[in-house]
Image 1 (cartoon, rainbow, N blue to C red):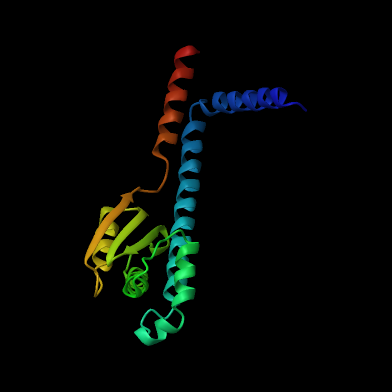
Image 2: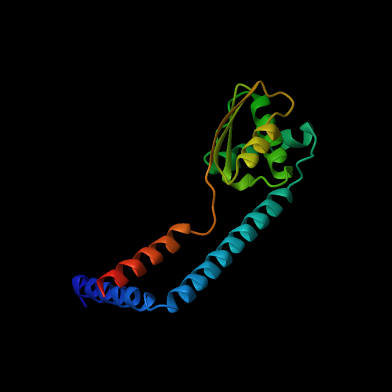
Length: 180
């Protein structure tokens, strides 16, 4: 089946569904189902974040500097693999490790969505968090011993149900009622 024919079939199916959804009480049911699905997705995302944080917390973040020095090259390689940068100064690697540990230990901070760069004792946080409170907690956690400055480049991007879906259904329903 060629691409144009497939697109035409999909467009027809979408139009049929939109028309059916505008049939009075059915629209409320469709919205309720959409809301349930959005809530399930939000819960699944929360579980993934909680599991990721639990895994991040599994590392021994309280190791001594001597223990860290034994495996410093592997920690630097791990950071590089995540797209993070660590300066050449030995202290930068230790600061990176301690900031990662502080983020993993901070409650309600998704440490997996945050990148940590360290250069000349200056920590730069990049990535996204869901709330302003998480952003503030992450910045506070990054102020570990030895840090000269924290540059916060985190973006707040709330997640959750798509409220525009309900508006689109209401608009389609209203438009269909005006036509017919």
